[in-house]
Image 1 (cartoon, rainbow, N blue to C red):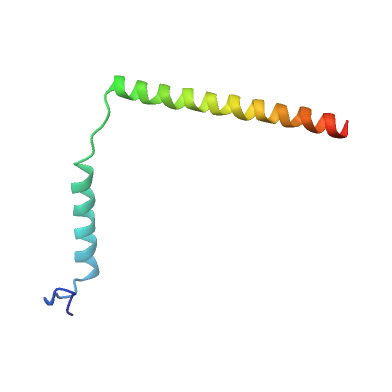
Image 2 (tube, rainbow, N blue to C red; image 1 turned 90 degrees about the vertical axis):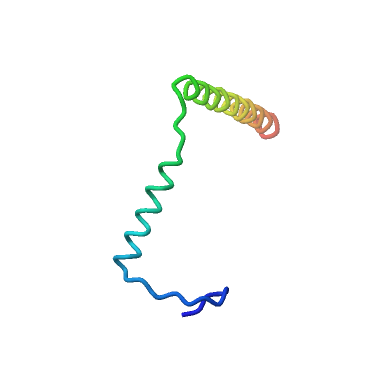
Length: 74
């Protein structure tokens, strides 16, 4: 089998491909950097504040649409 670069590669067995896949997963997981406790607290706080802001915006928008519909059809 030839590839785009013109070199020949042999087809690996399913077991060899599975072992290679697992090795690649382990090597990628070793690159993962876990956040510290303070970073995690900061990230969680930012997410919660953002969710609360979006909830407030949607609630006000829903309330305004409700008042508008009540005024038009009321």
